[in-house]
Amino acid sequence: MPCLLPPTAETPTPVMGLRECDYSAFMSVLDTDKDCKVDFVEYVRSLACLCTFCHDYFKDVTPMTPVTPMTPCSQ
Image 1: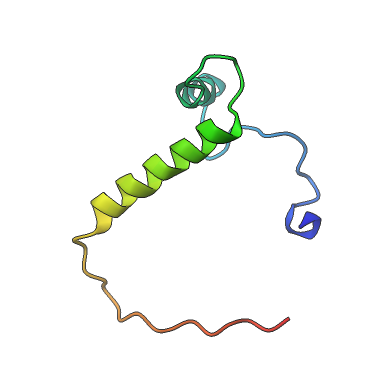
Image 2 (image 1 turned 120 degrees about the vertical axis):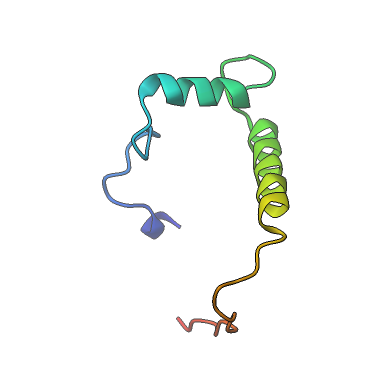
């Protein structure tokens, strides 16, 4: 797994042009028990909500191109 991390990975920082205040606001929304830490349960809960939202949003969308089966990559 360490080989998947870029060599410049230091600490979690805001990405995609988010300002520090946006990042802090987002993290505070994830921190449901307000202990100033996003623990595993809070993280998994947010992922489940995101997956549900995306499923509901995209369930009626028809694909533009036919889906081709993926072949497993060999290592």
